[in-house]
Image (tube, rainbow, N blue to C red):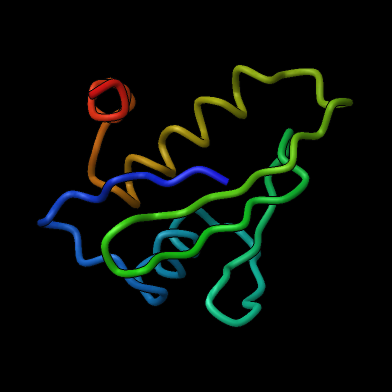
Length: 95
């Protein structure tokens, strides 16, 4: 499980996460506070929030042949949810 900081300008909640997943045409299901989805290369994407941070747990599909596409998609999803680019998240995590 990884936690990601969220920009103060992003009002992250369960409804916002669902809205972003719908905008990306992703199927998902809700299990309590967790929202579970998948994508080619990721068997399971489990995301939830406490209102301040985004938490994500993923399960990789080792049989998928194009991991760079999956990484690009997941980084775009995180950017949309947190408001931070990959570079900005890396800088924040290294502090």
